[in-house]
Amino acid sequence: MGTTVRESVLLIAVFTSRCLASSDMARLVCQFRESALPTEVFPLHAGYRCLSYNDRRVFVGDEIPAAAACSIEGLGLDGIYPCYQRGNGSLAFDPSDEEAYRALAARFKKGSDAARWRRCYEAARRCCARIVTPRGAERDPSRCPALWDGWDCWDSAPEDSYEDSYCKEYIYSADAAPSCHYPSRKRCLARTVANSTRAEWDQTTDYTGCTTKSRLVTKYSFHAAMLGVSIALSLPAVVVFFCYRRLRIPRIALHRNLLIVIVVRSALTILQIVALSFDSLEATDEASVMDQNGAGCRLLSALVQLFSNAVFATMLAEGVFLHRLIAAVFKSQPNMVWLYSLAAAIAVLPMVPWTILRIVKYDYSCWATGAADLDWINNGTRVALLAINFILMLDIIRVLLTKLRGVNSWHSDKIKRTARSTLFLLPLFGVNTLVVADKPSVIPSCDWESVFDMVGHTMEGLQGPCVALLYCYMNKESVFDMVGHTMEGLQGPCVALLYCYMNKEVSCCKHIA
View (tube, rainbow, N blue to C red):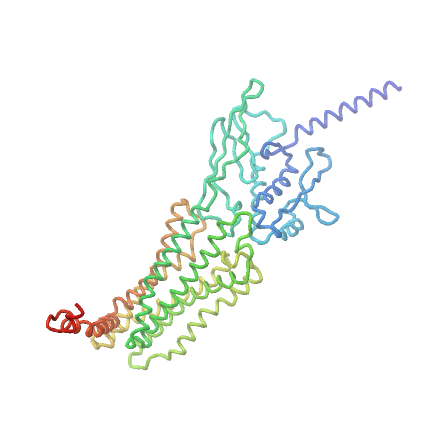
């Protein structure tokens, strides 16, 4: 009887060990870098790596949340995974768990960075579902296995080869990833171990192509240069408008004020590029001005938005003024105080919800970075102002082609020239606004993205010079005034030159000679 019991116990032990071995062989695993992890713990490791691979400056206190070791019962050493200690309990780095996501999202400075962490985790889960294999399954030694490297999913590849991919949007700490795809690369090597050759991945993936710094430096430099050219070509026209009394009439004062607003906006934008954008690119370990998010830099970003709105509000004031003069040609000109008050109100009005949302929901990065649901508050206002101006211009054209066709007075000619100039400017302002407001989220080539940005910056930089050219440098009134005052100023020197300095009979000049 005792022998029978001992045999039964032995049979049970052998059966149990075989079942456990069979269970271990049947366990599904996903390759995470150099380790094959069970599918139960793979996403937990991926969640931690997606979080810890971020720049520490995206976290509150510039500290990456520390990880402790937790485990899943029944998996032994395979069940160990990194977890986040909170009080007396622990949470997995699992953004699919709402409690864990809320706790860890609070450690990020920006909600957009917490959302990036979640998207990286979801990409890892999809990768695991694609590359999952039974533990111990035979693989072709001449091919590197499919794996997740912490940022991207790589398919199986032959030895001595390179696999190319692109940098995913969630790896960028900025609020908006580049619209184009930057290249990444991973190498499959042939390693010789114990007289046998086996394909293995180079554990370091080449993500050097993901850096956007050089392209951003070029983009910011070009933008600042175009705005500098705009200021240099616009300021002389502003001086001319102020210097000649004859040009201080309401119609020309509107041109002058439009130029002033463009110059101020350009100067503020250059200051923003230099003080915030370039500083952010150069910052390494130290917190940049944008990371500090001080009151001064937030005020600067708000002023840039305000004066950008003011440009289009002033253009609308020009359109309303012209429409009143042409469509109601026999009525008096509009009340200028009312017109300027309307333009100021239109410029300020969208800034109220924009500022409130910035303070409540997007209070980071000196308010200098974009947000999809925020940008359209100002961009939508500018597009609406352009649409209203376009409608006014269509009505002005109708009047010019009907009521004023046979009128050839000096006053009507000036109005016609001004209307043509304003009509010419609408596409210049409109196309650039639509380009900025509705930039595609994905552009196939990074070279096309650079062209896209440079065209937009060029059109923005041409706004001031074109206004100056049409309303001042090519304006007969200002040209005649400049020529007249120049001739008047040259009368004295010319008389002195002809009758003294070039006259040999004048004794005083002989002494001077």
